[in-house]
Picture 1: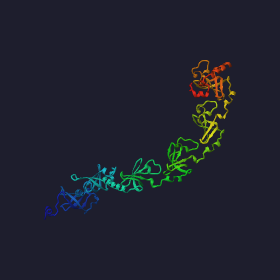
Picture 2: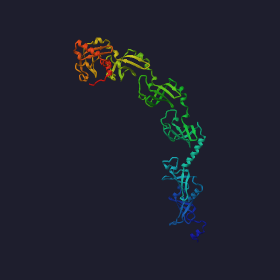
Picture 3: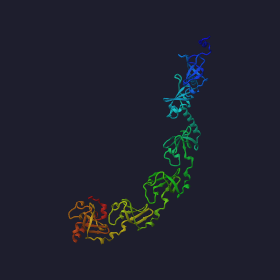
Picture 4: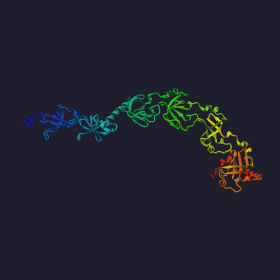
Length: 553
């Protein structure tokens, strides 16, 4: 009977460590596969060496590398993975120099990139996986891709692959093909690749084109994100192709007709339109009538009677409103709109409702340096000029006599329809006391009044009939007076003598020191006053206020 050794010597097969032999799977265990290679005992292959462990079936023929004929337990040690590696490495060396292409399946994620099975394990750096470095490499595991061999080291038996270079090469080929065949006016499908402040870059399957924000819509757009989002697919119009610089300009709004081409027929002057406020500026409001068409309501066209500093005082963005078309300029793409034209202009009949001479009563709505505005009716004001408040009092500012909210009476002096102004007067409600001043006061009369104002040159005394007289500093005392405030104070009651009346200049001169003068003394004092130079004639009430600053008591 032959011994095992003799049987092996007579066997046509020769077994040696490092050789690749064929074997048949005779049993699949939880962690290993039992393989018959025709040797005196079966060999063992770890299950994890199979690319797909579930595919290992009893009866399958596989190639294995004979690592060791027998271990201590008499088991033949085999490797399916190393057999495949050796076969594939030889195949890779024969068909794939650096720069060649090979297909592989991503096996695992490792530090810095991916492990890819191309028959042997190869490495793909993360920067070479796609055009942009992916954030999540795990999504590539299990997928098969075509790669370019960028580095091959037979001695170390390692391979470095790149998928990015193939993608860039394919995009370059597609870009050149697209540039050669693309012409302005073409409609192309694309995908939004990136958004910027000025537009969007569209991937045309190998060639990026710029869709500028001004070519997205005929209407107003603040940012491309209002219309587009990254990854969105859309059809665009080719506007321009620069083959030398490989640049393509794209348009979206050009797919539809320009609404301004027929704007005059669609929005004739006088038409009532509806729209939405899309932008507010100090001088008015822009109203969208339809996508791509906006009109401007100027701040002056908001109301017939009210004056608004800015459109935002009465309108807000997003507000729906009606307006009247006032003008259309197709070349400049401008439409003028008005809101006040929706109502009758109250100024058309203001002279009939408030003819000159009409007496009115209303609240003081506002005060300015030159007068007071009095409300005649809702939205309609008249103005009392500061000079028309009093016949007799010199008023520098209306706040000296009036305050906001006071209800006053006045008379209509003038109606200016073209300029939308109504002039009112308060003093005209009564007679001018200066017309009959001789009946009220005569030179030599002894009068009583209160000090109303102090000035460096004298003091103003409030008399009856709302008339002021002026006591010059020289007429206060027989003694020399340096400062008025040293001898008089506002509100003080004084007795004085009328020593001068000038009806033409509307002046009354008073003298405190002459209160007890005889007629002869009064005549002498009158001569002194008449001898004053024009620049010194401080008895003149009107000019005195304008020429001097008051001394505060």
